[in-house]
Length: 301
Image (spheres, rainbow, N blue to C red):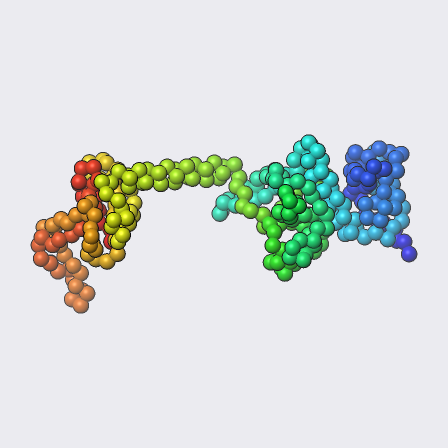
């Protein structure tokens, strides 16, 4: 038995099978419900916001919203593949502590979208994003009243994102606002620039360190017990290498740039007596020497 449909239908199917919003619909044309394919009426008066609804229908609002949102996402992606604007994901920046949102265009490796796609884990996703060789690369789940359950979220085996059906319908599937985000991390513009600068600085420091190692008059692998801890500046302003090793005394064989030096005075903490006590003068210590001028820089063990 049919019941009166009191809810508004967000989109309807035209004679070509495409979903259209009430704002884009033309009064007098025939439109169908995206769920039951029954005829719907376009209300386009001056007092109320334009909308579709059934005369009478057994459709449930949740079913209509869910099905319409999935079809709109697929339709928007198909339009993008045909040369239209890209749908975008609205996501939270992945930088810890950042509350900014950012817009990510649909990745170019997506070649098609498939509704109700069964993936390798055996689960069916609302919309599967498929790449080359017909391989699923991500999933979009549509939320109406029930979010993705924990078992499916754990077993899905793909990056996925969950979006609200009502929001999808409002944007025609072109703006996908994440309510749960299990895609690969995405950064806002500010942190993307910082992360890129940090990466460039790290790479430059690594290359500089490698160049200093190559400038040594011997190969570091001739002294396997030693490692390069850092690049430091010697007292004369030269960039040089800081050697480190395990243990108190430097093992043999010892690199030429690990050198001994004497200290005029020293003190140790005497735990039983709870006081500092003097030790023998001219106690031998070890340090790295600058690879350019020989000045001591530090000891690292």
